[in-house]
Length: 288
Length: 288
Image (cartoon, rainbow over all chains, first blue to last red):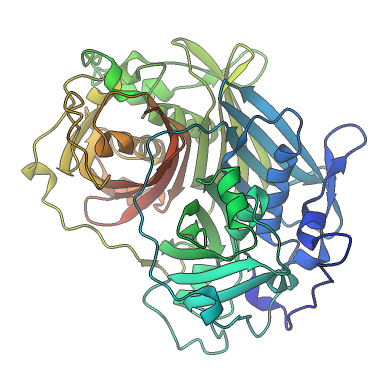
């Protein structure tokens, strides 16, 4: 989620519940490009300060594999590197299965505009099978989604209107009051697509980037910040996602170290009833 | 660190302190290949059960960028996907700078033998600059390196002899006693190259994979397990690594969720005096 606090006002999201389908599906849609590869188009609904929301770019790159007829199984791991700004307009994605094993498949992807690479990615897909299982992390003790108010920052890019965010703690900082520093960067929130959309692998990938940059939690002041590299590990299989439906997921994020213009943040995304759906990590550029 | 418990005996590591230099440097060495790209060779000193130790493969892929004259700055992020076994012998690495910005540079790498891709990777390099800094994680309260005995498993692949591992808790499991299950997968240990070698980015990348698979900590029994994808975020710059010299680093690792044949583990690597050098994450295949 790069560059949150720069736009003066939250832009109006287009009508995403129109008969044409959810704006999320339009934003990640890809068509066969002349000469090979896939072509997509940035969506005003998911516009960020500069170019698209990082989560929608991650979901679009993952979608390039999901819709490929050569795909084996479901996503296990995704890494997206945000190499440069994506201009409003069309973009080209190449997705290539570089190795297919009996139960796993390795993909490399790139997103370019003209000859300029704007993002690179890798993904591992695979077949899941029953094994011993255990969740070592504990589901946080939190009030239910309905008991919390929806929050939005005073100003921010369009994509924020596409998520209903309800904070247990660590809500949007008031960036006009930089004297309020926090010792801890943790945020815990319920979140879901707005308008509602049933959870699937691509929307889960996008949700992994909803957490605003942890630097704003520690030091609430205007500063450029943007994700450099994002990794998602998928613990959920398709039936577990289907059982979640349109219910909110619980996210919890925290930073580990801020230094020399970069910090890392790690997060978990849980189902409404306490199943760990994904763990996610990113390294973020910041300037202050 | 795939496939720990399969070899009957720890193989003897070759003399790594020979005048020819450290075995680590020989293992990650790359030369220009005929027709472009780089050629390397697996090292018996870092042999794993099947092919090389994952950490040495990660270090070798990172080295391909480090030695490239087009490189900008130092490593910020590295992701390596282990796509298939690497046979003993030579391999080919292609490393390509796909985007160079003012202060960051994005690389894609691949490792192949013949026409078969065995690993893919991406890296972000960049220039660091002074900013506000903070380490949010606490350095664990641990006894000093010298106060702890060196440990090695009863049996294991050659590469284990290349690291001096001293466990604070969560030492090598006795895989012949599967009745001893643990509720917690955490391991904390001091570790360093053996023979000694001053820490740098490539050896730090390799150290990030030293932690044995967390499934053996929870369920100490013979089972195949292997890293599928590994990510390292580098918090250290070159002067901080140089100040570390040959002193041991402290590592702490734990799993988050085991399910359907895969689990994720996250770890931190700290300097001898409590500076967070790297955070690292991986998703691991297991069978039981």
